[in-house]
Image (cartoon, rainbow, N blue to C red; front, top):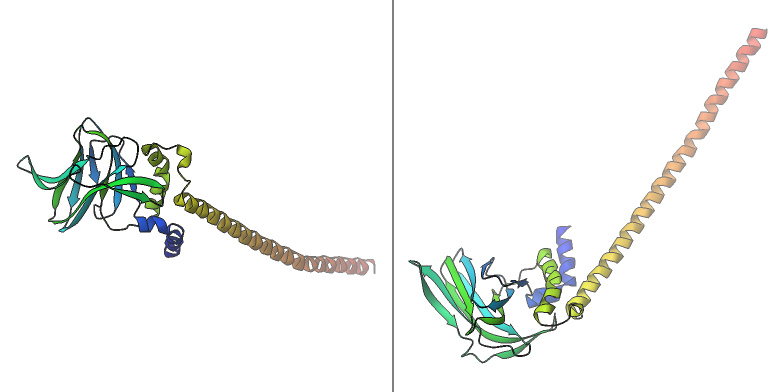
Length: 250
């Protein structure tokens, strides 16, 4: 039953799976812990006077993929940079850098949510198990940015719900109206999902109603079958009483 349920979700929300759209709105957090760094996910944040720090724990040797983007909005600065490091003797040991100032940013349109980005530098590197950090910054540490981690697709009901619920916040992040949140492909699939749930619910209710009707009919049939037996017994009792009266008179 669980497999069928997941298959239904997969068919309804296939674009979510193929685009690896798992958004996280940071709300100006300075330190963010990245869970499951191999899974593709997007962190939407804003620098407000200081850099942002992402902590990543690798439990085994593996590839780590990170990438920088910014929303395609008016007057956005494309100078967001980052560097990957780990702490050694309380000092930052830099492993690699992503320079937004040296990179040629390209336009990127996300069809599922109808959001537009400037796509910046990215890095894929094999690292040993351990605790790593990524510091995101810019020249003035001001402005919006998107930090992408991971490349593997994770498809769970929780990830789908998270993506759907986060959409209004993302539209606000891109400077758009909240009512535009579901005027996109994702909105069509959300509508389709609820229509499908409604149809399934109606079918289930009809089946339950039919079963109840059958049960009631069966119960009525059983009650009508037992009534003649009761009458016969009562008639037999009356006959025996009348016979006794006649014998007493004689």
